[in-house]
Length: 326
Image (tube, rainbow, N blue to C red):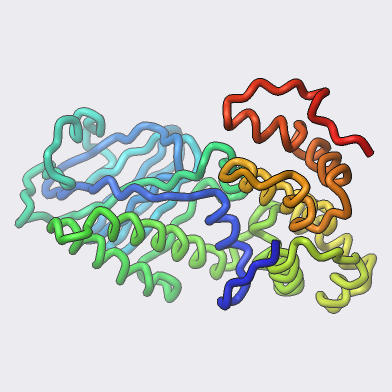
C-alpha cells in the first residue's frame, strides 16, 4: 500500500484524509455597540475568526479575558464554553437563541446591520469520522490562538477574505466555504507549529521534529516495506539507541510500533470502505501471510479483520469462526 502521489509525502495530509475531516463554516455575526454572546462547550473542533474589528474572548471560569484582534483565528479543541463580547462586563445572551431560526448565514447583533458594523466574526467547526476521532482529537492542542499580526497568519488573511466573499451566495458557495474552512484549519495548525509551541508526545509532534520528520515521511510513503530500526535510524542520522529513545519520547510509541499502528489504521479504513479480501489486504500492507496480519490486527484493534468488517456490514459473525489458522 505505497503512497503513489507525485506530491511530497506528507503524514499530516495522510491523517486528515484517513480521518475524513470535514469542515462546516456555519456563518457568523455582525456587531456594533455593547454586545456579548455566550457559546456552549463545543463537541467538535470549533474555530472562530475576527474578519473585522476586535473584541474580548473569555472562557467560563476564573481566567482573565483575552483580546481578540482583527485577523486573529482561534481553534478550540476542548469542551469549554466561552463568551465573545465588546466588553467583559456586558451581560451575555445565549448563542442558541440568537442563531435559532435564522435565514441568513450571518446575523446582526447590538446596533449593527449587514452594511454597518464594527465587528464581523466568522465561525464553524471541523470534525473527523467518529472511528478516527482519537487519532486527531487526542493530539490537537486544546486551544490555538493565531494572531493576525504574526508572519504565519498571512495566508489566513486571504482565506478569511474569501470566506467573507462567499457569504454573498456565489455559485458553488457551499463547496467553496467547506474547502476554505479545511484550508483554514490546516493553515492555523501550521502557524501554531511554526511558532515553536510545545506539543505532547504524538505523531503530530513527530512530524514537526527536524530529525524524525524525514523518517515519518518514509514510513507513510511506503508502510508495507519491512523497515528495520537501524535503517530508520540511519535516515535520521542518529545511532540506533538514540533514535529509538528520541522517537518514543517524541511520538509516544516505538518506531516499529508506530508503523504497525499506522498499518492497522489503513487496514481499518480499507475494511470500512470496500470488500478487499483480507488476504489481499495483508499482502498490500507488507505481511507475509493472512495469519500474521490477522494476529497483528486483532492485537492492536481488538477484533479480527473479518469481525471488524462484518460490524460495518451488519453481519453477525462469530469471532471464533473468523480466526485464520497459523
